[in-house]
Each structure stands twice: as structure tokens, then as C-alpha cells.
Length: 300
Image 1 (tube, rainbow, N blue to C red):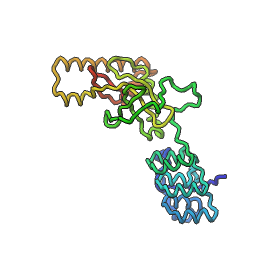
Image 2 (spheres, rainbow, N blue to C red):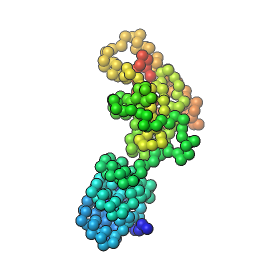
Image 3 (cartoon, helix red, strand yellow):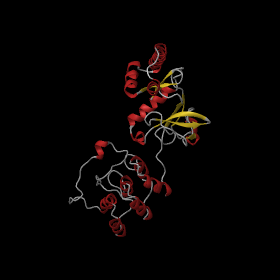
Image 4 (spheres, helix red, strand yellow):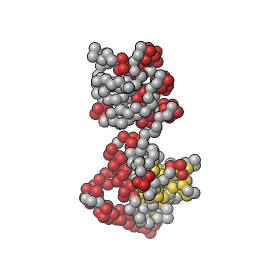
């Protein structure tokens, strides 16, 4: 059985799911009150001191010791990217998927801090990837728009808008894919914004608004898949072509205006509180113009 202490290990990188206000607590491990060998084990994991870890484990310290936050030495090593420590702890019987008080596992922490070698090692030893925040247990509850990420081919992918969108092939057609960063898994505000964005995108049907095709919500990373516009964005077009003829500029301006008017009307139609929804969307939504024989609005 795992032992648990009333001590907290505050050094180094903290849990990927811990509120930042709680993850920056100060403490002095050299103080007389910190004598628990389990905390010493966590300290040694943080420092990458393999000899000290072996000595503590040989003396009977529980490799699965948890501090007051439910964190283990494996959590610490995963956060710090200590591949050799992770291997040693696993070899000595560490549980690979312990959850701390916030629900984070060593693998989730390694993903959050982009420690690629630790990620590979944990997965090789049976660690399970963190579940997407919109994951459902019942297959009947999977959204109709759900896309299997294995169907997306990024082999010839190119960035479209500063890395936010990139091209891909999906069922033989070229699409634009917006990939959400791993930080979304741990940010409730961003998860809520993503849910709101999906709810809105499903209702937008207009010739001047880029078509929503589907999304990846049941696995990580989560993605939004939309129509791909091969002619590029308006800014690149203007740089390439120079000043527009007045008649073309007016046509583009009308396309943009129609898109914006339709979008605002949709907000007022679907929102339970039109004013509140409109304000939230203004804060959470970025607009960019995409050109493909007409100006289309992309809701990012």
C-alpha cells in the first residue's frame, strides 16, 4: 500500500494540473521538520541523484511514497525530465500511473513539460496517455462530428496561419487543422472556450464563412478540422498582388461584411444571454480573412 505523508515537496516543477497559486509554495527542505525519508526520495529524484535514491530504497523507503499532494518521486522525475531516475524508479517497482490530488499522472506531467524521452519511457512501461477533457465513456455519446485522428495525414503538411492552422489530407481531400496545445488539458477556461467554439461552429453555414468539417475531442491533442482555402489569406494576397482595383476591393468588403453580420446574428440567435455571449466571443475569438475567390471568415 502507498504511504502518504503530511509533508509537501515544493521544489522544481510542480504538477501540470496544480493551480499556479498552489504550485509556488515556499519551503525549506533543510529545516528540521523535513525528515521523512520519502521526501528525501523526492528531493533526490528532483536532483537526479541515483546513488541517494538507491540508498534510500535499499534502506526500506517506499518507492511509491506520496506527499500531502499525492505526488510521488516518479511525478518529480517526470516533471524534471530525469529519464535515468524514471527508469530506476520503475525498475524498483514504482507504479507508473499514480494520480496526484489534482488528477495528474507522471505521463501527463511529462507531456505538459515536453519531456519527450520520459514520455516514450513511461508509455513503453504501460503508462496511459491523459484523457481528453471532452472524452465520453459511452460510445453513443461521441459527437457526430468526431473525426478519428488516424484519418488525418500530415505527411505533406504546411503551416497556414503562424502555426495555429496547418494543412492535412482527410479522406482524400485537403483540409485545414487547428491543433490545440497540451496546456488546454489543464486550463478550464480554454476547455470552456473550446466547447463554446465547437457549439458555434456546428451552427455556422454561410458561403463566406469557412466550413466546419469535424473535430477530434476524444483523444489528445484535440483538433478542429475546417475547409481548406488553397488561395491563401487576404494579407498574403495583397502582398502578392498589391493594391486592389476598386471594384474588387468593394466585392471583398461586401463578403467580409456579410460574414460579420451573419456571425453576429447567429450569436444573438443561439445565445441564452445574447449580450453576455457576444462579449465572451469578442474576447475569445480571433478573426482572420481567408481568400478563395471570395473572402471567407475563419472563426479561430
